[in-house]
Amino acid sequence: MTSHTPQGPVDASLTPRYAGIATFAKLPRIEDVPSADIAVVGVPFDSGVSFRPGARFGPTHVREASRLLRPYNPAQDASPFALQQVVDAGDIVANPFNLTEAVDQVEAAATELGEKVDKIVTIGGDHTIALPLLRAINKKHGPVAVLHFDAHLDTWDTYFGAPTTHGTPFRRASEEGLIDMTASMHGGTRGPLYGKQDLADDVELGFQIVTSEFIEEHGVPAALERIRERVADKPLYISIDIDVLDPSHAPGTGTPEAGGLTSREMLRLLRGLADLNIVGADVVEVSPAYDHAQITAVAASHVVYELITAMAKRA
Ligand SMILES: N=C(N)NCCCC(=O)O
Ligand SMILES: [Zn+2]
Ligand SMILES: [Zn+2]
Image (cartoon, rainbow, N blue to C red):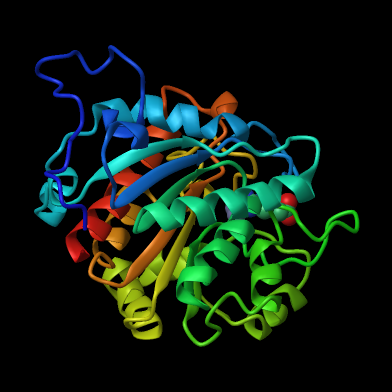
């Protein structure tokens, strides 16, 4: 916990929120405060995608939409930016022409940032970046429970023979022993797979699934019960692919699938997990070229806000 009184966002009643540079929620930059507890960092990188590109512009787009966030979160009864020093740590440089180097750059930068702050929420970028982020968090916490909200499993093996893509981060993470295989879970999964074997492999890799259909059929409370029972108080990394939301709630993404969660369901799920031991998180796959009226970016900014609130409260 930082010793100084946290410096909050620019006061929107004194400076119009649409004026000035868009840090996340108009929070101070990391270099503007003596120390910080929670950092939001961007990873503008999308060289790992299998379909529509453009998530490299995700961090900027989500920051733009986040200008409208306010400091008190009634749903969690907390003012996160007053409880902890939350900052924007800018963007991690990731080489767009060399995926292996990019992944190493993300791991190194996240490791270094993790030495300065207690917790990191990363805005992607495509889902490839979850792998280096998990490598970095393992240095601090060892294997973590991974709660992965996504339309997709992202435990596939290779694409065009390439092992590191946005469809494969959680298989690689499991193979490397980065995840707690007794406590990890996907949420919101749906849509066509390559074959039935995908699901069998996924179990072998340490995941259970709460599907999108389960959430519709049994509701958010039943989903929360299953997740909470599996994760318990293990160190928890939450990875949110924005395509877990239905395309009507998140059109701005690269591999959309029909039949997804509403943003209301997603926010309720996060609030219901807020007291868990969340050690890090990412929100990925926002691709602004396919967004309309900032629908996806608004949803993503609120998802980040709920994650930060949960982290600040628990601390
Ligand atoms: N991680 C995301 N968003 N998508 C993975 C989809 C992989 C595929 O095209 O099969
Ligand atoms: Zn996905
Ligand atoms: Zn994904």
